[in-house]
Amino acid sequence: MIKVGIIGCGAIGTTLAEAIDSGVVNNVELVALFDLFDDRIETLVQKLNHKPKKYYEFEVFLRNGGADIIVEAASQQAVISYSERVITSGKDILIMSTGALLDKEFLKRIKEAAKKHGRQVQVPSGAIGGLDVVKAAKLEGLERVVSTIRKNPESLKASPDFQGIVKDFDDLKEPKIIFQGCANDAVKLFPSNTNVSAALSLAGIGGQNTVVRVIVDPTITMNIHEIEIKGKFGKMKIQLENYKHPSNPKTSYLAVLSAIETLRSNISGGMKVGT
Ligand SMILES: NC(=O)c1ccc[n+]([C@@H]2O[C@H](COP(=O)([O-])OP(=O)(O)OC[C@H]3O[C@@H](n4cnc5c(N)ncnc54)[C@H](O)[C@@H]3O)[C@@H](O)[C@H]2O)c1
Image (cartoon, rainbow, N blue to C red; front, side, top):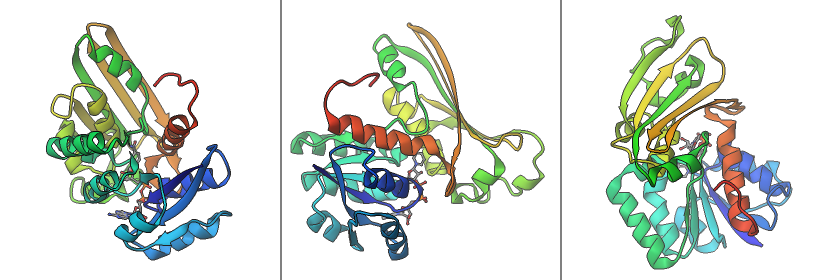
C-alpha cells in the first residue's frame, strides 16, 4: 500500500480524498491531512469512511503522518513553503499549484533536491490536455505556444486574483480580455487561475515564451481552455470545455481527475499510455 498525505482540504483535496476512500485508486491509502484551517480538515474527515490522521502543523504532519507521497492541493505559497521539505524528508510530491514552479530559482532547487534524494516531483496536466504533444513537438523546436483561459464572471468574481482588475464584472455583456502577456507574469497576477499555463510552459518553451490570454466571458458557463502550438512538427489547437468543480467554480473538475489519474498511473505500475 502506498500511503498518501494531502495538503489542502478544499475542492481538489476533498474530491481526491473521497476518490481514494472509495477505492478508485488501487493500492493507495490516505493516511494524513493538513490544512491551515482546522474546520476544513474536520469537515473532510467526516465525509470519509477510512479516517486519516488530522494535522494542524506542517512539520508534525510531515514527521508523524507516515505518508510516502504528499499531494499539494493548497496554493502556490504552500508549494514554495513546503515542497522542498517534503522532498528532503524522503517523500514524493504531487503539485497542483503549478504556477509556483515558474520561479526559475525555486524550480532549480526543487529539481536538485529531488535528484539528490531520489524522489519524484509529479505535475499533473490539470485542467488541460495535449502536453504529450507539446513535449514531443518541443524536441524539434516550438515557435509559438499560447494558452487562452476563458471563464465566466461568476467563476472569477470569487477569486482574490481579480479584485481590483475588473471593477464590475456584472456589467459585462461581451467577452473582455483582461490579461495578455507571458506565463511568468500571469501566474503571479492570477495564481488561482493560471496553473494550466504553468503546466504548458513547463512542458513546452518556458514561462517567458509562453503567451497567456485571460478572458472574462459572460456568454459562457463552463471554464474553457484553449492551447495553440506551432513548430516544426506542424500545428495543434485544442479546446477543453470544463465543468466547474461544484464547490469551487474557478477550479475545473478535470483538474481533480487529472490528479487522481496521475496518482493511479504512477503508483499502479504496468502499462502507461499517452504520458
Ligand atoms: N493544475 C491545475 O490545473 C489546477 C486546476 C485548478 C486548481 N489548481 C490549484 O490547486 C490548488 C487547490 O485548488 P482548490 O480548488 O482545491 O482550492 P480551494 O481554495 O478549494 O482549497 C485550497 C485549500 O488549501 C488550504 N490552503 C491554502 N494555503 C495553504 C497552506 N499554505 N497550507 C495549508 N493549507 C493551505 C486552504 O485553506 C483550502 O482549504 C489551488 O492553488 C489552485 O489554484 C490547479
